[in-house]
Length: 443
Length: 156
Image 1: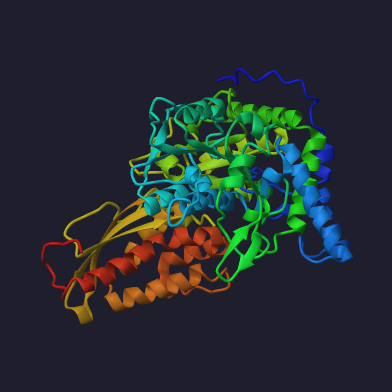
Image 2 (image 1 turned 180 degrees about the vertical axis):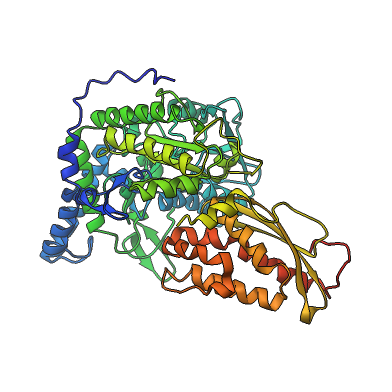
């Protein structure tokens, strides 16, 4: 197998050695002195000094509750928080008022699902009615979703009586666009930009066109795209999108929900309480305009500042260059693993419309056991269903091994992965022949 | 972690497969990785003095979970239910002991090979999956009514 059709990119290659020097954790050793080979950035990425320093500087110099108080620290903290919002917004081609800070992408998607639910029951204004979901309406997702973009919609269906439908996945890990026909009853189409398991990049423009044609709103899980490729949410045409800070070199505990301005302006809140109000009386309250309407309570602050530093860092590298770097590693991993007998890639084997998640199974060696052998060699990968259980069921496997790449990974690390997989086969006695070894069921 | 005993049980698991008769069946799943086990128990004798006549199982899981189920059958089949639950408690204590619990080979037999697993917290659930299925199946067997030897199995 060869890696075909790499997009023609003209970005200068990343200086990986210089980048690695920015990430203190990458110089530590694991499991009896072995160098750390971190190939689990799809679960959580590591953070450069610039992000750690920004958080520390904020806490040592400016910490205060934002959007409250009139003292100097409160002003400085609010400025730092809002400056981070503006830089993050620019990073994804959005207006700052369209960027809502959430705990993570999971909370962002739940925010949308619960706001739609709130627009579906009780007293609802005319403006809110466009988000209402009624019994018999349809919510459409895909079979490759992370649980975070599946379970909230299952729950919204349960609360409202709507019906969940989903696009299937083809054997080569692409979305089967013929598997669902949207209808006038379709109210929401929710899908990932890039699969966290397969690496597949979904046809966002096509899905948006189909959703718009029937008047449905679109919700994009951008967790695996925003950290790894240039993304302009406004240009993509989706209505809502969510991503997490900790997957893009930033802190945990901060994420972003983006929504088109006129939609956020009309949407009812999810969490309510302090800072999201306009006027409060005992009889009832009115709410602040977005983004404050969706940021109840004192928000995470040093984390938002850290995420601002993370997008500065990524912008400094250039997202075209980041994408090209990770695509090259993906190609090397696909090619290297193809040489190992008994390894089956779960997902596209070419590089078209694909990002840097490479999941695979090794015949006759369970993913946990492959992961354990890799871990003993210092190679950190994810094993299991990666919060995409229905997708694994679709491919008839209980668990896969997943390697994911980021700006700091190198071709040598890909080679360490491939060597480790060979070692796992040897250790479990399946290194020769076709890998058949009795009748044991294996994931 | 991968002691030769564990690999031996993994390569040639004891009492693998689902058999009849049985008194109760338990299906357990590890939600973090999706691994599964279906385990059946056949009990003989009356409730107070029942013994474990057979344990059969089918697993979809890693070497640790498969070997652990195999070792389990060696340790409990032929024992009284009371004694088998004592072995279970000792195994669980060792597995959850973060490597600080010294296992008693007289009680745990081949089970002591899993002491190393205790140092890998993410794998402890793998080692315990079959044992939790056994515990659940025994409870179901008793809940289903008086245990009598030799009758046809019935799934609770």
